[in-house]
Image 1 (cartoon, rainbow, N blue to C red):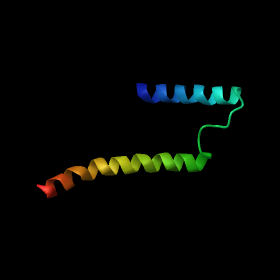
Image 2 (cartoon, helix red, strand yellow):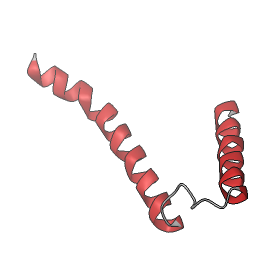
Image 3 (tube, rainbow, N blue to C red):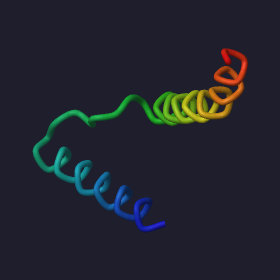
Length: 59
């Protein structure tokens, strides 16, 4: 949980700094960005899930 809170605080500070400096937001549009992050996470977890099965098949 500590990592999640630190990530949220870091993201908030970066977003605030970008707005303060009048720079474009360093993220894709809201919904597309969230869906992209979820897709990356699910792909990573799927790889972790199927890797042991693939390794056992190769033996």
